[in-house]
Length: 176
Image (spheres, rainbow, N blue to C red):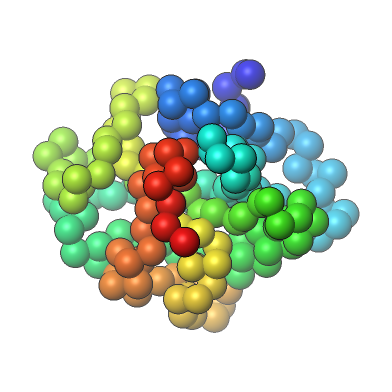
């Protein structure tokens, strides 16, 4: 499968999927326009866990210039209302086997960062940490961030309580 030509966050997550032997499909950036007539925002990847769970994943890239993940307070986790609605619509279209998922890809700007035990993934001379949040969890905890920009986010405590390492999604260790 060819490497995405999109943003570096999506390319890094695609490389992570490949490195971990995960079956996946990308949503072709060039064909996203075909979805526009449906007024449904598209997602970035479909990937599958060994137990046949299917994930519709939207990658959200964020720079992280802090020193520690421990408090989670400085980890940006906002998404747009369109992101939420789009994933919900696609889950409905694809069916019960599929779940929506946000992958927050943090580009670590500092060399010495306490990632609270989370794996650092190196790709293309950058360092990333990926944190997954199920769409259902995100919806349960979301609060308005900006009315003008139609964005929502999770409080630091809620984010920490539902944050998953992507490894958990591919190793059958996901909590129910």
